[in-house]
Length: 341
Ligand code: NDP
Image (cartoon, rainbow, N blue to C red; front, side, top):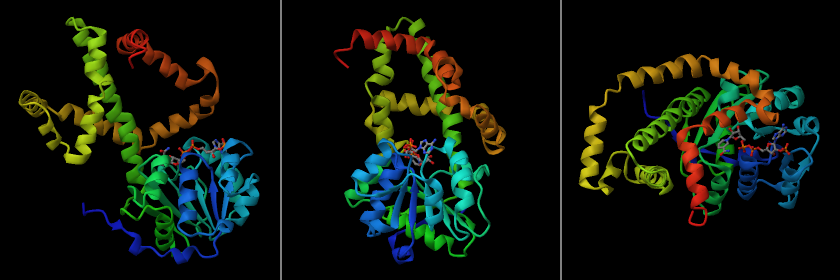
């Protein structure tokens, strides 16, 4: 696999955005950050339209001086570019019903996550450009790094080049939101979705399980709840390890630990047989993520996620997870040490 291409400011021409009406569907986490960055990059306020229902997000946009349109059909008709920045699970319903039928034939559609495009949940005309500009940061960091004159990590791709000018436009938009300053990595909705859902459905569930089972084994061996909670995560040691891994290197960060720890960790990891884990991971990646099984199952329960109480499947999962020994112990510890935490 060749190294990924990285695009910088010099690869992008902001001039391509001249005279274009750029609509942000959503003014939340990413919408607010990206719209402000784009305006601060010199795109005139009159060219930017925030499409949002009349509520606190819309008020926030107005208070920042943006023009806000509550009627999505009107916004769609005006758009040369639309950034879809509402939660992934509501995009198909809102975009397909109110935006897609009213967009210009040569409009450019920008997503910040690959999911809905990879699983073909959004409707586009073949003459339109479909691009992904996906920051790898939460919106507040997208904004604060831009304000500091710094870039942020971001994936960029062209999924449908309806106008023949899709890449140049995607790079121009990436530059305008500040994504090419530190280098935007050429990617695809497949790659982004595979990595995102793999982390969510394979890597982190295993990490949660390791902590849950590790907690129970040490508790059975006589360790107290208080000592375990602090030792395992409340001291923030795992957060520091990952911060060091990002700065010094995944393995090299071990040098900050004692020699006993370094020896134990390296010899322990090398002694473990990764074959079963690898097979388990492959099974999730190919038979749950990439084949659309999870997506299909999630679509069926998506409407229930707005329900209250046990009718909401996410609430049921929380309830079940909270029955575990680790969570129960943590609750007791937090109640007891409330003043200290
Ligand atoms: P938010 O949850 O912050 O989105 C809130 C916005 O969506 C508000 O404008 C809200 O307005 C609008 N919205 C919510 N529900 C609806 C609805 N039913 N109909 C119309 N508008 C609605 O989203 P994010 O910014 O977190 O995510 C946007 C995109 O960015 C997603 O594709 C996500 O995957 C991607 N992304 C997110 C990152 C993150 O850190 N969160 C990082 C990188 C990418 P109102 O409620 O008034 O309608």
